[in-house]
Amino acid sequence: MNGGRSTVAESQAQSQAQPQAQAQAEATPPAEAAPPAIETFGLTRRFGSLVAVDNLTLSVRAGSIFGLLGPNGAGKSTTIKMLTTLLPPSEGSARVAGCDVVREAREVRRRIGYVPQLLSADGALTGYENLLIFAKLYGVPRAEREERIWQALELMGLKEAAHMLVRQYSGGMIRRLEIAQAVLHRPSVLFMDEPTVGLDPVARRAVWEHVRELRRRSGVTVLITTHYMEEADELCDEVAIVHLGRVAAVGTPTALKAAVGPEASLDDVFVHYTGSSIETGGSFRDALRTRRTVRRLG
Amino acid sequence: MHCGRDGQCGVWVKTGGGAAVAVLEFVKQVLAVAEAEARKLRHDPMELFTRAVQPTLWLVVFGQVMSRVRAIPTGEMSYLDFMAPGILAQSVIFIAIFYGISLIWERDLGVLHKYLVSPAYRGALVCGKAVSAGLRALTQAFIVYLLSLALGVHLKLTLLAIVGVLFAIFLGAAIFSTFSLVVACLVKTRERFMGIGQVLTMPLFFASNAIYPLSLMPQWLRFISHINPLTYQVDALRALMVEGGRAAVGLGIDFAVQALVLLILLRIAARLYPNAVN
Picture 1 (tube, rainbow over the protein chains, first blue to last red):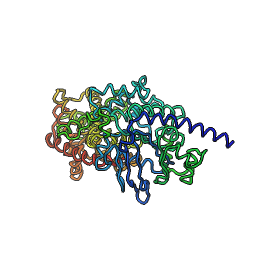
Picture 2: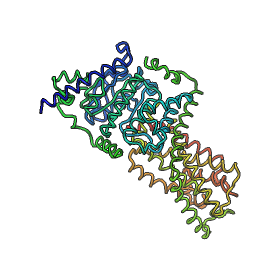
Picture 3: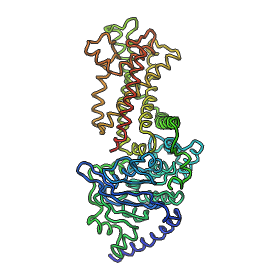
Picture 4: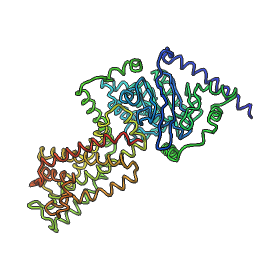
């Protein structure tokens, strides 16, 4: 039984390594020369006596897909909130797309896209209208608006559903619409908070495919948070394992697995660095949110 | 390098720009937020009819009965004529005062986060909400006008009068929806918000000149009604909407007070808005 499991893991690791290498080659060629898309320096956030994010120092290479991996309540969402200027840090600083998240918040906002954890496209509007409103809000020039909207719809495979009300969309379609919405203004960094939570495996895979395609075409840097090992393993070039507000380990999924053992899965890596399974942790509120999303989809 | 790399981005990212550019940007953002609301209304006009129930009850039942009783001195006007603007103001305000609930809803879904992560001015997002509430209020005017015509209220049907009425209720809806937004930013949960909304609406209504004139009120109530923005709203509507209607306070003061209140509320809301997500 043990042997069977390891072969699966190995073949997964192999099939993993290749597309990654390809993707890296396709992304912005002079990867070494480019400064990091995201850098944090001792980023810390406290809520009263609770330290949600504790002295986080990270660097995300431009053009990569970077995963913050950890259980609910590990501090991933708080980190994203700080990087997207929604929440000021208690200590430390961060630069996103070359701008400081506190002192140059507006500049940061111009250069990032954001897909929140919950399905938040407006159900009372059509897919097209959702994009139109945000194109206007971001000041996409009138002459380019239509073209960009249809490009984004096409990229996310939503052209046919453009004029349907979003409340008739499936969960996977809503998520892809939100990604389209988040990249209309051609951001250089895209943040996605738990992008596939509540989606079924097929829809999840479709979202991954579209994110890869997006990165390939636009060279955008993607930062996702996730508590799905599989997602981190398949989608991300690099992963930071976050536990109790701290980074326990950073590296490519392949390197992280190799460091723990020849047959290790990312689950093993997680247990190795945090001493606990990813299933533990998570506050009442997080659980409630996740369930609410799932219910909305079901 | 980041902005330089994707060259398209540089076209519309304004680094310097004068005040005029900023104002234009602001207005465009306000309109974008309001457009979302207008499009929603177009997709689902049913909502407008369900909201017609309350003004219908007040005008048809309460209004008809009270005009027979003749207990309330309204000068040369019939009681229905006197009351119709009050009911319009009331139905506008009752909708606006619960507008904040949509903010809490949007916060819970993450919609608000998406707006706040955009480079739009915080003030523009708040103003956009106020304009959205104004749009909804205009539809109430349509319903109340239809009812009033059916009941034989002596409406002023000149273009100037109608434009004046629409402007007034737009202003009123903006005031009370922004007030509602401020409350929503502070209380943060739906349950608490509904509680506060319920507690506020009736006192606002009764401590105003909506269904009886200021002159009829005891001193203490008259004092309260003078710090109630709804009073100025009703006063303006009464002068603009019905034949023989006169502003007890004065049309100029009515609009000045409302504009001032709105500006103050917008400033407060724009300050509180970004914190609503935390």
